[in-house]
Image (cartoon, rainbow, N blue to C red):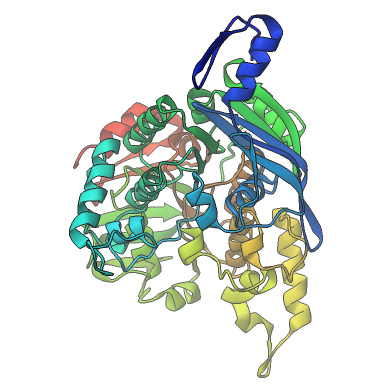
Length: 526
């Protein structure tokens, strides 16, 4: 924020100021959102401790911090989801205190949540205009024609090629994410909060999103961008605010920041390595062999591969390449059309998730909110739900044993939670992911299937997850890991399989390949 000479134009009056006072007046005019003295407590934890944030018009302001730092809580206080304990919020200089998300939307504040909460049985345009359907002239009836035209108009402005009549459940997560962004834009919002907006997007879609963001900037919109992806932050942001333990730490110009400086501010210490040092844990013995696996209701076709004990096998590919479908078919969560699965040389039938768990498999799913957590249950219940048989005494559950195991996982995974009785929905996304990880570890699986295991997790917690995966491999467990981040696959895995168009396009040694080679294979059958 320099002190250079600027001009300030008011309605009907033209005035020119110079010097420091002029610069300060200009700065005040440009401030779109200001939050100060923000405090919010939940039972046993202070989520916000005198936090603050200032966002200027026509800028991208990144909000960064470890999981549990208070980023989402601060935004939920802005958006009317949470009621702040104290603090003040100013929008365009006027103090506001939204009591609901609808009130926030009506006043020009929109939020695209990391965990999508959509009406999956309804079509795209229903989801965009829900609660504000266009009506037929003079009649209390919804105008489907007008709704379709309005949706097409929004998509054309954003350059999106999506059929407004497509049912949401039939779309990949990445397209559903873009629909949610389009919905936010349709409110003509002054402030748009994007919480991990690229966590489900392909590289092509990320580039498209950045074009949309630049278009919104040019219109004077203020973008609050929450992400753990450092390269994106440094590329797209104008300013960066760092939070830690619910407190404001610093605001810096993005152009003056480095990854190392961001990490130091986030975690309060230096982090020299992004990934743990690789060690050779692969044994000669084969734990899993898949032959000709094909799916009934997806494009997965004739996939074969093997997995060794102690091996960490990566699965790469573009969105829609069949990565998730591969894991779901192995785990029995999707209908298999053909193929065989062998474990330790024996033919097995993972007909459903229950039988797969019994055969020593575990699956950590891609969509944490939809298929991972039980949001109405607490941390303890979410942790032990997949291994309840272990805690049975006759026909009763041993509550003390469940509490002990939950404590063990909370400590092992460094889960930030007020206690076991806390509803899991009250935890940050990263801590929810750790709870799910702990849940599956308690089943003592031989093969752990991980679909985007570090999605929405901060850099410090990612390292802990990588270390955990490596420790499992040391113990002779085997891991199959899907990830959209190629650097993650290269940094953690021993081998990488590349999927393309539902088929296996190739296999590479993680230590002797490049992102270019992986991308070439990923486009092989597209």
